[in-house]
Image 1 (cartoon, helix red, strand yellow):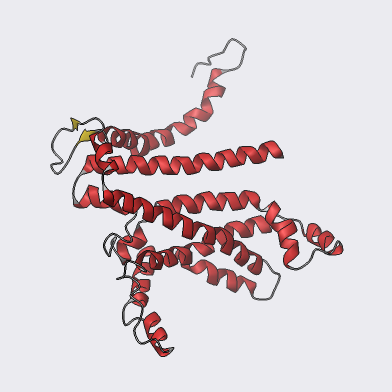
Image 2 (cartoon, one colour):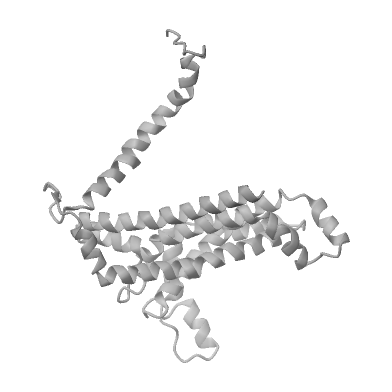
Length: 300
C-alpha cells in the first residue's frame, strides 16, 4: 500500500489505521441501529398502519396531535414516571448498603455475594413466572398473610392499586445484586488508610461511611442513578409476563404501549411517535448525567 504523506509529514495511513479497525463495527451499527432509528424517525411523521406492504404516506404532525390527545398515552407516561420515582431511589441507596455489608472481611462472605447476585443471572421470564405464582390469589404470599390472620389475600396483580407496585418489587429484586457489584468495585478502590485515619479522628461505625464512603462513591452513585433511570424507563419484560399492562392500563408503561401499538394493533407510525417521545426522555436523562459529570470535573 502506497504511503500517503500529509503536509506536516505524518503518514495518513498511520492516522487512518484506528478508523479502519473501527469500520466493521461502524458498518454493523449503521445497519442495525442508526439506519433503523432514522427510519423510525421518518415513520413517526407518516401514516403507516395495518397493511405493512403499503407505502408510508406523509402525515406531518398528525401523530403528535393524536399522541397529545391520547388519554392512554398520558396514563402510561404517568405510570412510567411513577416507576422511575419509586424504583430508582431504592436501586441507588439499597445496593450501596448491601455492598458495604458484603465488603466486610468475614469468613464465607463470598457466599453472601453470590446469594445477592443470583437474581441477576436468572432469566426475567423465569423470574416473572415465579413471582406471578407468588402473587397468585392462592400463592405463597397470600397464604402467608392468611396464616397471620388476614381473612382475604391481597390482589397483587389484579387490582389497579397494587399491580404496578407488585411489578416494581420484581424490578428491584432483580436489580439489587447488579448495582451492588458496581458499588462493590468502587468500595474496594477506597484505601483502607482513610477509614483508619477517620477512626482516629472519631469517625467510626455508620458515621465513617457518611464522611468517607458516600463522598468518594459519588461517581458510582450518579452512574447507578442514570443506568437505573434508563432501565426503569424502558421496563417491559416484567409487565409483559406478569400483567400485560392490566388491569385497566394501571401497569402499562410507555415501552409496553409502544409494543402494543406496533405489534398488536400494527399502527407502526404511531408506535414510532411513541418511540420518539421515549428517545427524548432517555436523551434528557443522559444529558443530565453528562451535565452532572461536567460539574464534578469542574469542581475537582
